[in-house]
Image 1 (cartoon, rainbow, N blue to C red):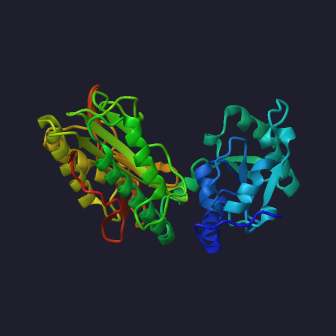
Image 2 (cartoon, helix red, strand yellow):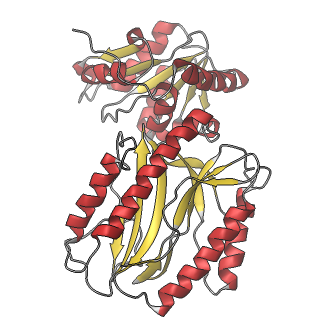
Length: 389
């Protein structure tokens, strides 16, 4: 029996709108065919939630309304189930392309381009997402084509969300809030970090009470004393203790759309230093939020944060945020000094104020935000405080 279509995150018209924007950029670059390999961009253009290890590609052409997804045979049903596309637009290559030193899945993609009859025209590649060996394969086999580097073309299109996307990101933000509040409930002296992590992740999956559940999730980051000066690490096999500080960064996810949040916790009264850093970062966060509006730049927002925080004696070396959307980080705009990306309505960012000051001391707070027509909407709603448990 053929596999049925699963619930779609968005209507067909939404995906066709996105594809039309991509095709407009293709025509401007004189490209007949675009080969998309970034999973975030594939999700954006098709609704696919799969994450396949085998080689894959989405082929967008100017002549066809729908794109074509080329995947390993066993992955074909999942693509049919998740995406808006007709099943005829899912091309499954055989196992003979797998673990074969002579040919691989990208050979199947190139074969398909030849079948389309466009191998001597403009072909766009996300070269930044390909290995040097794969890029060379495309260039050598498509020797008569005009290969155009289209790295981040789709990423920059999706930096401005539709209202439908914003609705999904609000749902993701509610999940993130629920997980942070669950952390405040389960972090206690004597509790194993792993046990607390399991409870927090369960909330990331279940979602907020009465709200939608997550459709997928990413492991969250939890740094506890004496590791609060580290970034991007997970929980340990240790237990929480009286006087411990805990920094948490987590997300809620709906259809791969992500809302992120960071909060700092203290078991017992926070140290004077932690309180001072919190107050400075909070002042910087407020200054940044008050700066967000269409026409301002990412640099304007960052500068407002840095000025306010530094005036209270706390400096931060790293950027203070980045474009947020599918799969968390979008590789486009940064909230950083010198990034002159102009803010537009329905851009979304993680205003990320993690600050790692010493090897054994750091602090985190953040919000997921949306640029509105007149200012800013803070998507995450958990209390903006230093949690003392």
